[in-house]
Amino acid sequence: MTMPKRTAAIIVAAGRGLRAGAGGPKQYRSIGGKTVLARAMEPFCTHPGISAVQPVRNPDDADIFDQAVCHLAYRPPVDGGATRQASVRAGLEALASQAPEIVLIHDAARAFVTADVISRAIDAALLTGAAIPVVPVTDTIKVVDAAGAVEATPDRALLRIAQTPQAFHFQTILDAHRRAAREGRDDFTDDAAIAEWAGLTVATFEGDAANMKLTTPEDFAREEARLGAMLGDIRTGTGYDVHALTDGDHLMLCGVRVPFNRGFLAHSDGDVGLHALVDAILGALADGDIGSHFPPSDPKWKGAASDQFLKHAVELVHRRGGRIAHLEVTMICEAPKIGPLREAMRARIAEITGLPQSRIAVKATTSERLGFTGRQEGIAATAAATIRLPWDDIGAANGGSNQP
Image (cartoon, rainbow, N blue to C red; front, side, top):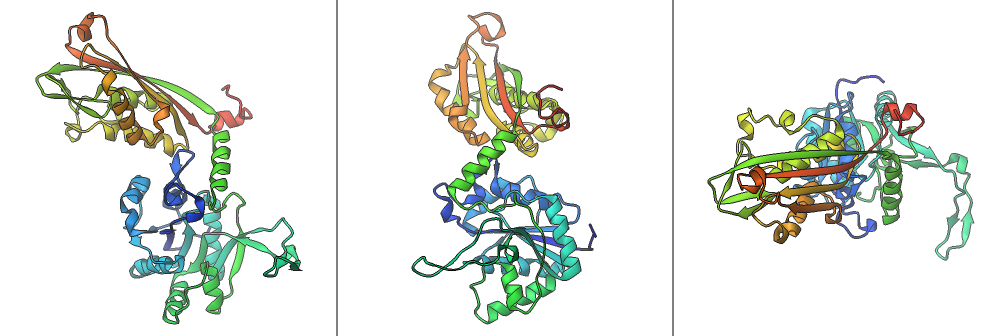
């Protein structure tokens, strides 16, 4: 791949995705344990040939956008317009002061773009000035009239399915978009069509059949099943945490503030339930423990809310391309009584992790008044986490076997 001085990418994520059915804008829906938007943006944010990633979002989506991609590096997002064309132009204008040499324009609904496709897009733009990824048409295509009668059968050898990222010399496509806006043309469905209208020759390069656009509920179901089949490395981790009790007026337990006549003696908020869950997830990942990620010697974490520790552990699973299948925590204490708090705790853990509540268990037991928990000197918690990861190199080398 040739490395231009400046290559930017625009991620168009301002649409509503109504054809995808209920569940909010499709780019923020989870698929395989990760949002569609995060899957679409991450390959650009981590590609060595991309110098800047410019997201375009709907202004109503600011909070969910930040939550979906907070782990990635990108330019401040800009608000999109009423059409895809207007949204792309907003992204181009936001990059104008940076004057990149090449720009790639990608739809957030294409969640499975690869680094290879991105590299081919950069090379093609450098060579031709305007190029799009395409895949061959394998089915016979019919042209029909308004009544549904066949009018023609085009030669499928001449047909291609267009994909994104579409790649252009930056100034050329910016000028084309500006001209279209001046002339009131807002009916183009992709940037290649604008380039063609502006008189440019648009080249093609090899796309990827997996780089499909998520449009309908059936698309989501199919890809969810495909990703699930890939996550055959099933792992279980366990965690344990304990904190002493001291003077106070509440306890944080599984993310819930519980009024009590004692408090935790701890560097953070002392939430033993969430701490045990964090260690269980890290154990399944074989990635240290909570102390190695959030050292108690670091004043940054003094009094910190433990939900951020759990969010971090969940994000580590997502970065590995995995998902969490099940979480279980057992509280060990004489008081407070956990039973009346159980559902609130399950709901809070679900909120923090993004898991369905049906995949979260909260249990409780006493130590029959034995030991430090029996004497109410402290509270302990144990936890277990089951996660699913893609097969690593060892698994792949054994033909997908679960034996090393």
